[in-house]
Image 1 (cartoon, one colour):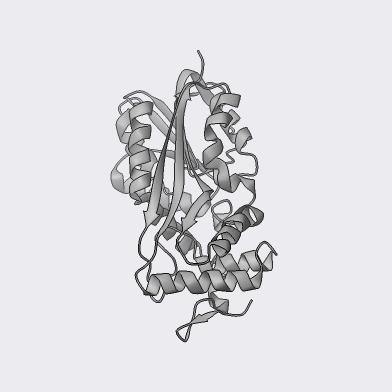
Image 2 (cartoon, one colour):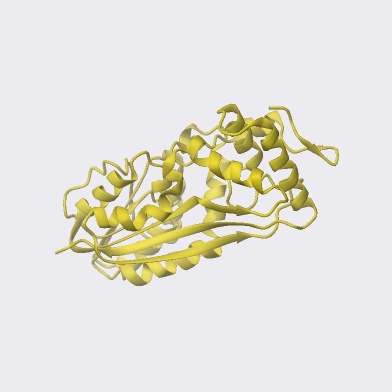
Length: 295
């Protein structure tokens, strides 16, 4: 797909399209062309006010206390695992599982700097490799959207919980994405192309409650937050904070025939124009569900 141009500047270039692969996303971080950019995106997303509010909601429901044994599925860079390790000391333990060795290297370093202990290891959320009924608490954040079988991962989390154990899962639903540009049809086409490129788990957030119901979790509570972006400088920033760079995503959508080239060009031109003229508005919904394993 050729570069679209607005105001004489390219808004999609070959270098951009090689930087990150939205199809790999966070499911195969170690295979990304630019792992460092993916890890920086994790830090940026963790700073979203919506994520912070959902983590506070989670903490109130999981109520970690000294002696608890905790499993963090898709632990990423280990920031939550480090906090939990301090909460369950003395006598408790935290295990962090992630598919990415690159993320776990950073996580180990950060936990060491924090002066706490977490047992990090690579693993598969759909096959945790942990014993039955081994943990008091299990949590997972922004992980199911990258899995082919989210329901299988939820069942695994329930399996490793002790009777009465607490579970909290948080995730995004990218089909709730809104973008204010003049061409509503282009926005709709971009949004509809997301699951074509990434698969149906991209909308995992809105499915969490029923996935937990199906897995037998009781005492369920659910909540939601909306993350909002109101600024983006396309000439100095690859993407709005915490989002995969949008020009390569559009290129990959077109390449995969999930979006037609003309629509992709219109979408990018109008979004870049919104960024340059201070008229950005984007939002996406995030959801969390908490409950207990019966017991």
